[in-house]
Length: 158
DNA sequence: GCCAACGTTGGC
DNA sequence: GCCAACGTTGGC
Image 1 (tube, rainbow, N blue to C red):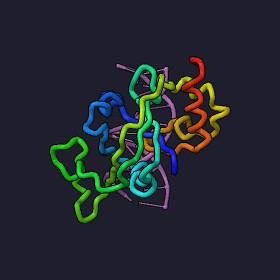
Image 2: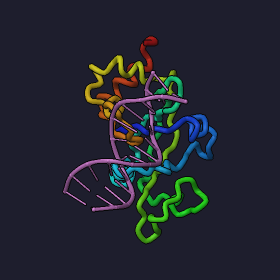
Image 3: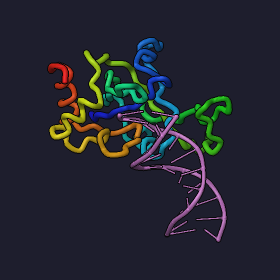
Image 4: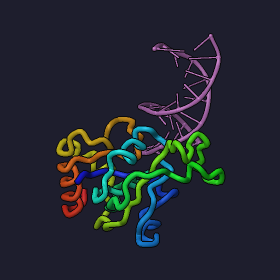
């Protein structure tokens, strides 16, 4: 089993939106970046877990944990001219973009903010989220990094 | 709202 | 294949 981090702009799709979704499950779609697409299509496996990260807030943070329940399959929003994610270069015959389905596991006891993660950079090591200028919306997390973050969750506030 | 970082596009 | 222009992301 592998670990990941999935970013979502809070105004686009929030953890509360996931909590309110049927079966607390959603398609992780609309990703239009090749590196992130490759992870979604080729690397995320059923049973993998991922941190749910909110960007675009005053205090960006990891707010929850989700689990992959369906592995990569074509992102049909690319086929829909009415969708904001429409991409006419993606076809049913040769889909360019892929998505996975994820299900809510649990909300974090408290948000683990980006600021707090930066404070623990030494122990987190080379954490993809903390790389300079990083914009990747699907990124890998090592088992050690996962454990550190979960450990921060139950420690005192930063 | 600003701006740095980064990805994509397209002319050559 | 290079690189300037442009658009987007995302922290602040």
